[in-house]
Image (cartoon, rainbow, N blue to C red; front, side, top):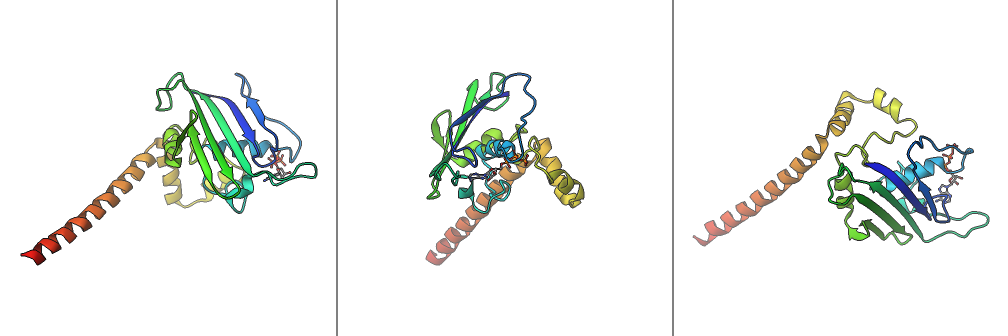
Length: 199
Ligand code: ATP
């Protein structure tokens, strides 16, 4: 699996549609301070389902929409589209090329698309979960995160190891199943009460 390209349109400092093609051998992005290098990384994080505005250095999620500059009016929509070569089917999908698109409008509406088909946020998160590149992964390490990992509690470090080892997905599934089981038990108890009343 390889990152092929990134389209950024109306996200943070990218007022105009910008397409970055990641050619083989490309290892870095350089530019003057404040030119948008971190915004590119945040665009990748965002399109993969990031839900924390704080992680994206904002107060609320709509802050990621281009909010104007001296020669450009603010925009009403942010769009980021990532294209991945999945010919080795590293991501669990039949497609050998996968595009994931995320859009956010100023009124708070958002859209997620996988290969131009509308999907839920969960589908995007599931696609990347276990791949090592998802929103919770460690393939993107922000400034300050390294120190936070080393200075964190052992339980936090354990969570990190579980995520890296791919255990986190099963824990999440287990929690969902346990909740469903508890709900079903409640329902059964209610049915039993009704049956007892009818006797
Ligand atoms: P450095 O090298 O200093 O870390 P950088 O190249 O990583 O800088 P970024 O932090 O990616 O730069 O970009 C910062 C710029 O993005 C700032 O000029 C900021 O005003 C602009 N910016 C951030 N959010 C928005 C937004 N919603 N609308 C318009 N511009 C924005």
